[in-house]
Length: 283
Image (cartoon, rainbow, N blue to C red):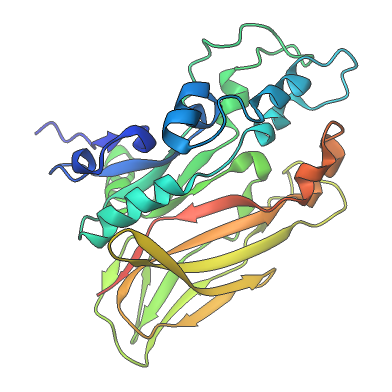
């Protein structure tokens, strides 16, 4: 009644029945706190209590000032499949819930300062790791709420770099629709397009170019998904052959960050999630 948007945080620890309740507009499809908290990692993500989280101390407690403290998240960053399963189950049931990422930044955990002079858990540091991009014509509260509820946007792990040129759309017959929209399937005349995003020129980087993998997924009931098209360092154009809910998932091998990773440069050779969109609905 107040016009609020209802979003469920920490989806990894919520029963699916709760997420299915009427009135839910969106869910978290990732949360940094869950990755870092030993109990949540173990009980709900199936990971070791501490795993690689201890490695983050090498970035924050560095007497030689060789490490970049903002890169600490690479030590524990891991996208668990539990988020996709729960989101898929909601979408497959007919609920059009949008997905957002949560940084869970509270600046109340690690009081000590890293060698850059900031608290290890500063808002500035944590909030730059991940952001949610939504499509509006102007910065207006009602437009933002409308874009959120429709799912017209995507989550970006911006600690790996800020993307430019990102889009996700479909041509259905003679009409073009964007992420969050829906149209009836036109056999032989429905195509989904995902351009290849690139790094913003102001993103931290070296001379090396990252490898970027673009994947298009279709939700498969009851809680699965399947890759229907993919490319490496190239855009995707996919001729749709059946209706469904589709989303784009873009991964990056952050070779461009290698010079910031003296402690463990192998992380720059590991493919990591970069962008996850909301859904396009071909009915």
